Image 1 (cartoon, one colour):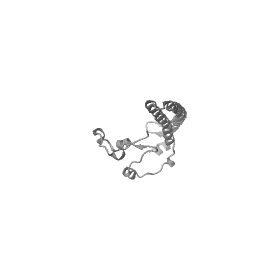
Image 2 (cartoon, rainbow, N blue to C red; image 1 turned 135 degrees about the vertical axis):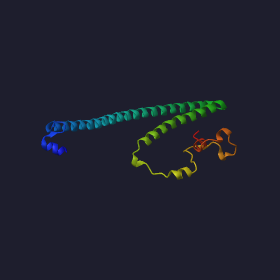
Image 3 (spheres, one colour; image 1 turned 90 degrees about the horizontal axis):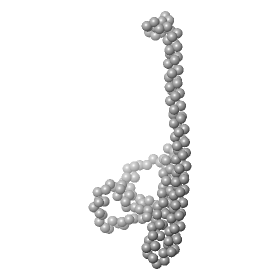
Image 4 (spheres, rainbow, N blue to C red; image 1 turned 45 degrees about the vertical axis):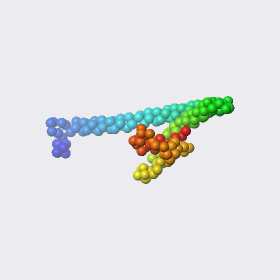
Length: 176
């Protein structure tokens, strides 16, 4: 029908063929501008995200550096207290507590680095894992962890009996 109207030079309602062509060109131009605008907005957003990612990386490095420095200060003071403790059990316990705190602060920095590295991995670096096998496997302790309650020889407190498997497994191991 449009081809017949175009052949006659007039469309229904008295629209001239030249005006119809100009209208089509304007509509196509408007659609092209919308598409260009969408891609431009995506480009601007990608640049913003890249800038934020760089800022976050710098902040992460500074915070980890500061945590490691504070851990070193704690370790130094723990050594001083331990050296001055002699036979004083209270000072020896304080030195041990400082050493544990130093290790905890240092492990926070290491944990932040591990999280950052995990977030920056490419999709090709991930390994396919059978989750049902992981769920059936016995829990493994984190590196350097010691068992809190070996062999569960004492009865568990009532408050921990009805907890989820994941929370119970997480409570069995500690790094200090």
